Length: 225
Image (cartoon, rainbow, N blue to C red):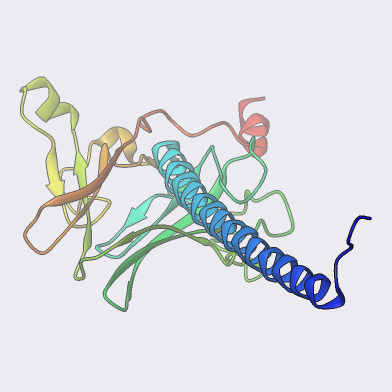
């Protein structure tokens, strides 16, 4: 006659099975949390890389704009504004005004990119910025561990180019003197934009091919015809 399990043996087996299941469940949850953490870190890294590349592309695609337009390229040690053909936060295809700033933060500096919302009308007014132009919330394109960072600009004038001299480094854009008379009606972007630290070490640099004249506007056609 076959002897069955006693009640005590059955209870012990159930306890062992429960403990084993609990340990296995905790292990699975730990692996899941680790995987989720990796996914979050990877997503954050990809988002940072996308932001950096997108903003670099927008700055490289800066275009000349008319001097009477609020989109004419200007730059100081902490702020750049201009017009790009490859916006980041609005649909591509239309030139969009942007603002790029160096903003101090705890332990470093953030490079913040914003775009200017298009006001009502055709955007061709000669009176300067409209009151209803607004900046987007923007994105942080890069973060630097250092503080006291500055924008620096380089301009390869035609005279220096013909004389085979290197581009001139500037603290502001446009240059105060010696700007080529070709640009008395519109302002091109600088040849090079850099971010430098207190020791003049270059931390980031983008070249631009914005020497071309700005596009013809609607009112220009009326003057042509």
